Length: 87
Image 1 (cartoon, rainbow, N blue to C red):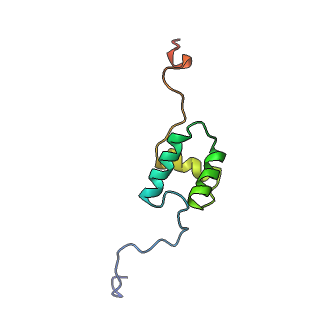
Image 2: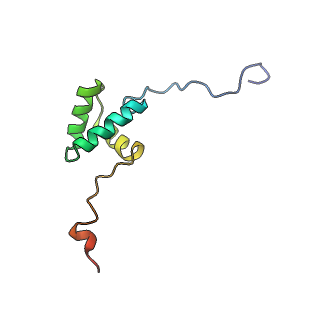
Image 3: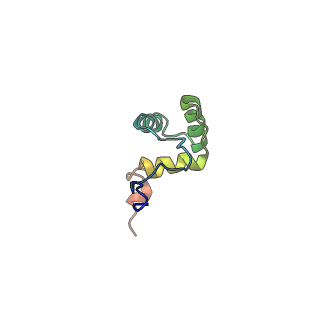
C-alpha cells in the first residue's frame, strides 16, 4: 500500500455499529440503571434499556456490557454466611 502511495493508518471498521455503550453518556446511563434497579433480572434490564434508548438488545449483549465494559458484579456481599464460613 505504501508503494502505491496509500496511507498505512488503520481504516474504518466495517463491522456492526454498537447497540449499547457506544458513548460515555450511554455508559453512565446503564450504570445509573444498574444502581437504581440492582434486583432486576437481565431480561428486565433489556426492556428498560429499549424503553430508555430505543435500541433492542439481547440478554447476552446486556450481560457482556455489564460484566466486561462496566465491571459490574452481581455477587453477594462479603457479609453473607457463605463468605464467613471457614473450612
